[in-house]
Amino acid sequence: MAQLKPGDVAPSFELLDQDGQPVKLADYQGRKVLLYFYPKADTPGCTTQSCSVRDARPDLTKAGAAALGISPDTPDKQKQFDEKYDLGFPLLADVGHTVAEAYGVWGEKVSMGKTTVGIIRSSFLIDEKGKVAQAWYKVSPDETVPKAQEALARLS
Image 1 (cartoon, helix red, strand yellow):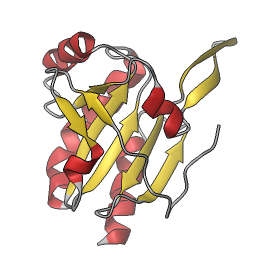
Image 2 (cartoon, helix red, strand yellow):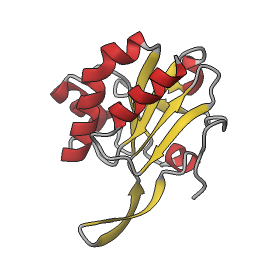
Image 3 (cartoon, one colour):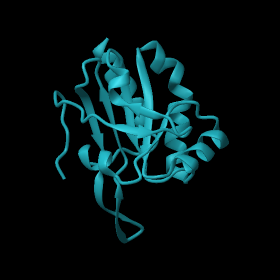
Image 4 (cartoon, one colour):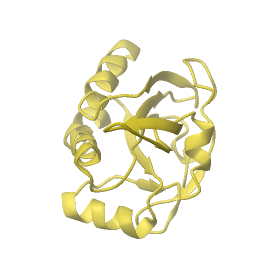
């Protein structure tokens, strides 16, 4: 699994959001993007992570950054997750995990002593030109926002 690093071009994508609408990374050209990958909608860690992004959106917006979440869940599952927690930003369905693979976040992981294959929780700050400004692999749910905020402060 190749990991992205600062300066790399962020892999482009087009995925359906929780409303079944196509969303492309190119739609955000000229803006910074906090892109985070989470294993499964409406699980404890993913809820913590997504709600922290929701709560930080005013600060992210002030810093010129949009938020996008990606998981292998279907648009319907993403919609239920969005409505339950009033997240209010695009949650993208990477059902075939091709985008996760392109970002190097699909692979083996160990949880409670069991090895599985799936999303390795990670986040990326993508700059206005579509390049990776920062990459955090194996990020904890409660570190996604603080790490992004630190990086955004350095970029401004």
